[in-house]
Length: 277
Image (cartoon, rainbow, N blue to C red; front, side, top):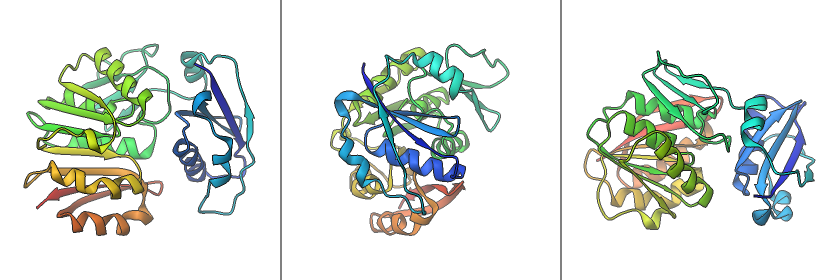
């Protein structure tokens, strides 16, 4: 597949600001990024790239990004990630996420192996790591799970490893859907059913647990769809937004009958645990 590389110098930015810039690039189609030599490099499929969208990037701090755009040779994702970005990550000493080229972690209870093809959904980002923590803390054995915006499938896979009975994993992005299929097979978790689409393809059933790590606008727009597949006591875990967005999101959650039980914050990113009442 042919990619476009968008790069921006980040030597004047703090880590949380780089995260926000990367998130903006992901929102316009980037499906991976690395940070090296004080430069953020994001990758967008050539067929999906629209340079005009760069003009609409807005950051909540005083910084004007200057982007360089090139079309690199075909990327060796394994080599790129192993060298520049993807190192194994351990969550709460219970779960490790690694690539096939990393050594095994036999001392860790839950081991998830994913192909190194994108940065979001590996557990390195604060939103993903908080959602993984929620899954480790939840009573999930025998439960039915809906994973919205499944990305690489790590949330669905950990749910399966923790003995969830059935998991539906949905993503609008075709690459993410295919990644979840591939990684589910690699981790031998047949109870995951992956679907390609948005909230309109959610099956007509109810779930014990709903996971949604997307972004603020989608969470607000799709809250009604989540509520339709809840029953009293369904747990809803949300992330993909900033701490400053919690009040706005809670207005929508309350409107649809969800009650806050817990919130987590990491480096300005937030996650919520709610219950359907």
